[in-house]
Amino acid sequence: MVHHSSRSLQGTKEAGYKKAADGFELKSIAPREGYDPKATLTAPLLGKLVWGDVDYISDRGKSAPLSDTENTSDVSHFSRILSSEVTKIINVPVMSNSTTNGIAGCLYNVTIPNIDNWRRFAQGTGFGAESIAIIYNNPVISQKVVLNIMDGLLAQYGGGPQSQPNFAVHHATLYASKDPVALDTVALKRLDEWRSKSNFAPIGRVASYVQTATTVGLGTSDMSRIEVRNVGH
Image 1 (cartoon, rainbow, N blue to C red):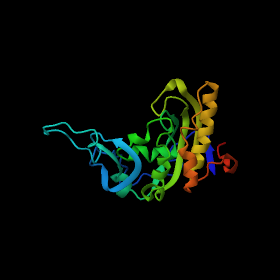
Image 2 (cartoon, rainbow, N blue to C red):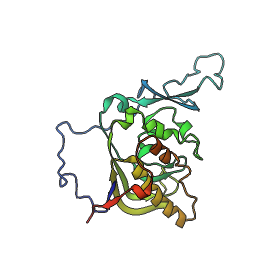
Image 3 (tube, one colour):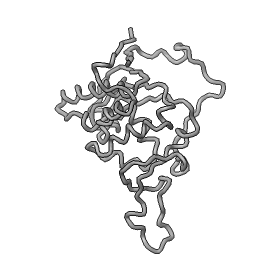
Image 4 (cartoon, helix red, strand yellow):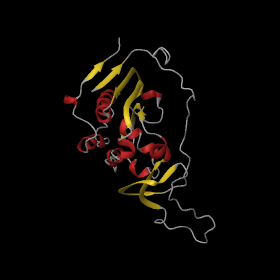
């Protein structure tokens, strides 16, 4: 089930939220040290490692340049924040397409930005995209995400996830669901409707991992089985 609200926000205080005694903390993933060498995933795709990846080998001080194979790997590492610093996750993606992965939605938002050696999963035309569902299914992610809230106040149907105001729509909607696949499915349908009006190609094929996510038990991608309720006034 997916809930959406078009009601304007009145502020967290009016919603009943109280400031925690210790405030809040904003963290980023530091290059190399920000990833957990023990929390790994392997996928049958080789990726070219870059500085900041855990297994990257520097050629500084070496007499000969590294070969093309020395800095390639089929292993990625989860961020330490994800693997050991949090126990529950409220996933808050934006409602946007992705030029390489179809949609930068719920499944994408906690996978690609939270692993190193991620470029192999974002090569466009669906290449390797199915792996996103497999990555999400890892207990490091799947057992911690308790709620997905998609920000559709301003939705973007082209050029994403980078900001492209020419392809943005004032949608004034927030979506919420415990089912990340259902929420991505609803968003995909809406984004493709806007793309069709602009004569853009549909993005469903590039986002085939949304259907893959159903096969591994992460949720439903069948629109006929998804109920969307408007909880706004």
